[in-house]
Image 1 (tube, rainbow, N blue to C red):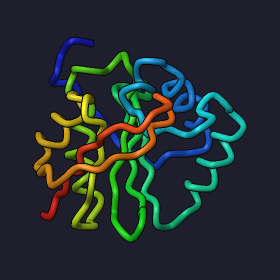
Image 2: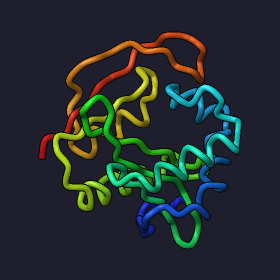
Image 3: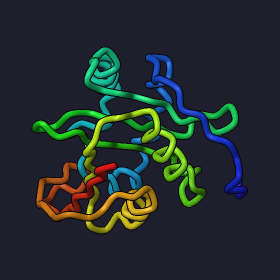
Length: 162
């Protein structure tokens, strides 16, 4: 799928999507780039319990990203420490093809909460570019323990106001 002009669709995530989305996060390179992952990311039962609960949380907006007829990833809004945050995970097959940027732009038309924050590992250049292409501005840095790397790393904080 080399054509950047394909159509993506966002739809509310269902329990049936969770098995596929779980598989995406098992990829070692993707996990490293995401950095701030669950402590036990390979535990499917824990994943299903956590995300089934989040699907029923009215403060969370979970959407599945579809390219053609294929699940390509997920995107969600959640509240953390009083701030509205964005998160997304794209299947490695779709990296570098504009899927994350298109999905985030579409998601921002569905999700009215502002300001909205994005956090990204200092060396996750692809995700930094996605946020910047969608109008997010880098406003600061923080340090936190990255479970996927088993060490404290720097993360960049981005914000979108409009």
